[in-house]
Figure 1 (tube, rainbow over the protein chains, first blue to last red):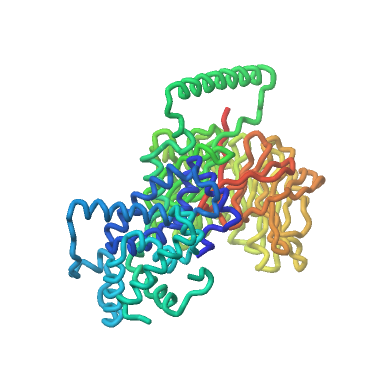
Figure 2: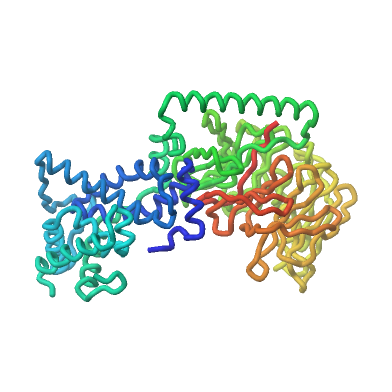
Length: 185
Length: 408
């Protein structure tokens, strides 16, 4: 995605935001909110939880932005913060043993759930959602960062604190399971 | 697992994930998200490490010492070097969702949400206590001229119930800080210039028979200059002066146009010199040579002379001390910038690194810098006139022009 904030001025924006510049921070929000929400959605499989995760991620980013040494790593870092919040939400929900089963209803369109459209496409999405849910949350994080956002294993590793070979191994395991569950390949 | 090349299965998975994740796409107001986060966590990261009481005490002592030094320096400065130009205060500018204020280095940012819609041309009063701006609540709504007290957020609509359908334009305060003048087109009508008191009273149209536009206050606040033309002679465009009460109308100089294409661009963007003797303007150059020039008219004699020569120049603005006329040049060959020239046409300079937009600029009250927007309207540029490089700070969604607060 690249160009929402020009790389040449990214460092200045990050520096300004890290010292409390609200306008600079708004630019960062505008550039990255959507990606963070998509990754959180893939990680938790629930729209409301995804939005909740990103809402929780922004204050963390605001407070810890100064710890970001390299502004070019902003995007992977923000994605990782959101994904981590999504994982923690899943963990908390699981610990409380509350499971919500989504049943499509008339309010879904208003809430953002996909309705209507091609039944085959819808079925494919259901299959993908089910296959993702059979992965561990940590595996969904690396899958989303790699195949949804397009980060490489080094960027993912730096963002989530793993070595690149470790990321690649986790991705390989996840791919094997997805290939099997999706009947692809 | 190759980072560079995706296998066919990985490509299919990537496409399916992208489609699947589109469900999560919901637009958000980034400015509001940032504002709510910043409001909830008002202290940025820099201060969060000061957890231990001893460090906080040391920090407080240093702050007190520095404040004492600053106060002492200000007192000495006030005694020895009185500054007739005023001190530099906050730069007001528009941004997504509101009017923003920041110090010239970008610090101290504060945003006043305008409740939806857009705001244009925030303009500080001469004493730096209040701010006028155009408000447009929605695309279809007329413009309203609003005066804001930034301390209390109290607002007053001074344009009454006028159905202003023109584009927002420069707002000008009288030197007494109690009256404003602004151009407006009501409905589908002709151009007009209105004077209003800042408390919302005394709204009136000036010399409507001349289709006035581009008003400028005299420095003593008793007269208003404007560009006008009469129904009787639509080929002539004049630079007029009228008393603030609407009397003592006088034609300063006139230009005849046989080419209607050039007429709208003669004697526009007027700006009165601080000594009250001259009025700077922008005009299209002699046809067919063209080009836009900065000119100066002598108010008493009506004599005019061009300061620049046929480039794409506009928005002349006298420096607070009257020693310079700043203007915007460009885009010429893709470049544009801020120019400076002496009132006698000498010493032309194009300031280094200033690639500003073609909107109005604002002098710092101390006359050392100029505030402008970057060409993409995402930054405020603070441009020193000594030729050193500009400072910039982010201003996403900036429009119209910034305004620099004058402190006593």
